[in-house]
Image (cartoon, rainbow, N blue to C red; front, side, top):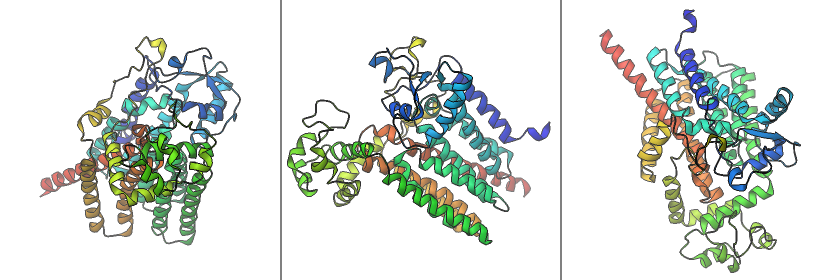
Length: 475
């Protein structure tokens, strides 16, 4: 019996109880659809359960626990999320033919989250019961927050990004803490990265970062089979990122490009005509400055055929990036706007409750929301604070890297440095790739990265404190 009583099992049991209460008990808590569900519904063969509900009931105000079965692949949205959903839809239709209960997806996500939690506590307690328990409690406080878990009972892709990110770093640290790193863990790590990179098109760039760190993994063992496996997986990650971006649906690229330019570059531009001239675009597009793709009543409809030759065929995201490099002040303004919205884990404009619960439209659940509310209401929403936070994090990381005496230890620190670098990418990509549109929600992966960095710093301090106390007692 005693062998089962250890930090990882105790923490996972607590996490399972907490997840069950938040995801399965009444009242039902999810996240309302903002219009994004349809592309997933069309892909996996689901539909809205009540075909007669009003627009106000279907979108923004209320979440939904039931979805009807429909024909798969009436549309297609490229996301690793559909792999989970197709499998769960098949199982659900066999055992529960009446409707698809979204809580089945929530339970599946929760099991993956508990797996990541177990791995993190198991392999990163540094041989200390206290450090292991503190790490587990920190993860429970941060990543089991309702701001994160409410997404589990929805069709948004955010849970895939969050869970994959946690699994990626849990598996990476497991690999680097093994006395003899195994190919099985390396392959599992690759699979977790695959799901993270392919969760959303905006995650594609981080696959390049992981491909580089796999080159470092190649040298933590000396046998050729290990090296060739690491090199091969590195190349596969790089290729995957390129293919994901190149093959993204044309419609999605057009939406993102429109948002990036008209709702980003030209938003509050001091000289719209000059910006258009610099990028070789017709002056008639001036009337679209400050508009977003989903806005109705624009002077030129977003799907107007003339926008093809006049805009979509002339500008790319690379042109936008180069424009920002020539005008860093404009980039900084959009970065400041992103920073103002950077710590909202949840979309506050989307309701959490089903209509049947009798709650007002757009009502939110604040059960177990300590971390998300602390971040949103008390942390400074400024570029200066983010720069200071990163400076402290990387200062500690560089200190540990310089102190490391072997290659494995240095790669461990580099792995944690990569965590911060992903956060930077996750912060910048929405600005360059989608403008100011729904920026808070698009910074979700940045929030995950930031929170993981906070936990890493907390555990580092806990480890140093325990070490100092033990040293003092022994002297």
